Length: 211
Image (cartoon, rainbow, N blue to C red):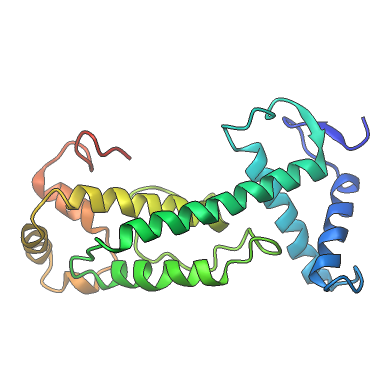
């Protein structure tokens, strides 16, 4: 079977270590493959993250096939890079019309946090790192994912919230939030959920704007 494995299973350490060694060689600028234990752990996590990205990519036609571990890693890294580009595109499209409705947590997370992630994210050597805390709470549980996958999913949640709130007058949204709490701007709460409960919707989003 060599380096091949059915993607329903797991790659062995013998299959993964050579990939980590090559990554370490690039990390040291092509000088050697010797790195600290902590750095080696980080690079192994980077490899595993990319392999998982490949395995969980539902649109991948090779999902049910046996492929080399290194190929799974390479394709997973391509998926990671595609997600970075998608995140940047989504952010650029959203930010010009973005409204924080007075929520300081939402404002800082979107206007400062997301750009900081895009600036400092290391897709090659630490794709598993989320980097930012994503303090503004969204209406989807994202704790089980990390790196660009988590930030991209988070950004999509923000975009859906913006689409929902954008169907209302900005003044009405602010009035609802102010009625909920005089100092709502300092709360770390989801403003869309506050508005939704106030308007007594059965769903946090109207038809046409789904989660």
